[in-house]
Image (cartoon, rainbow, N blue to C red; front, side, top):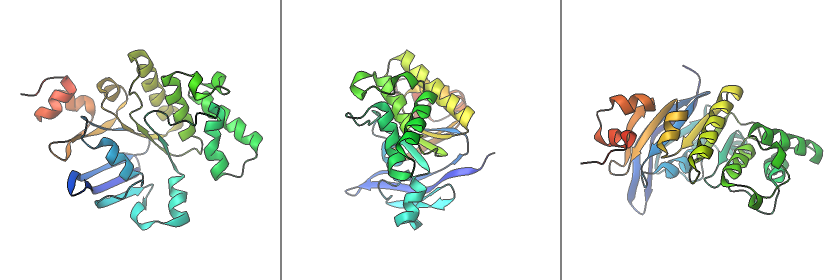
Length: 250
């Protein structure tokens, strides 16, 4: 068992008095690919936004790399957030910047590297995701799969030990999705990076996930935790079984 790099305790999210989820607790260990899964409306992306501090939780605590988020403010909070990387669903690239310039944005904002060094780092990160030859292209000139890879490269710009990916396979064809899954596994293995991946794509979950939690809209919280392959075969929860076996609920 490796070091715990993310600890979530009794987290809850509410909007206008309506509970999205509550009593969510889990741990992520260094080097894992940890998946947050569930059906539409179960609160996966809402959970992600609270874990990384975009919004405060209604209840509960989050600790990243041993530091409690709720106890941090100002520069101490910013310093911790610089140690995580986030890729949003579409890649969220700046349309007027090349891929290399997109990857260079965090370097420009958070380091004192000169432009030449930033450009070298950006190209190196793009090389890690298979986009070395596309460094000079604009987002409009590349495919959706390439945009997601570029988003991962930008999330890696500051060498964070944890990467959060929001629906990385959404909207991709099966071959492109499989290639992205392979990339995530390779980066986790080669760099020792911890990945927390939000997705409902079953094939990706089974391909990349070391462990997972499952959220459920009706239950307003977690209904499963463990190895996704084991949950598929052994879970006695009918919702979990239906999800992993693509079955219709009675």
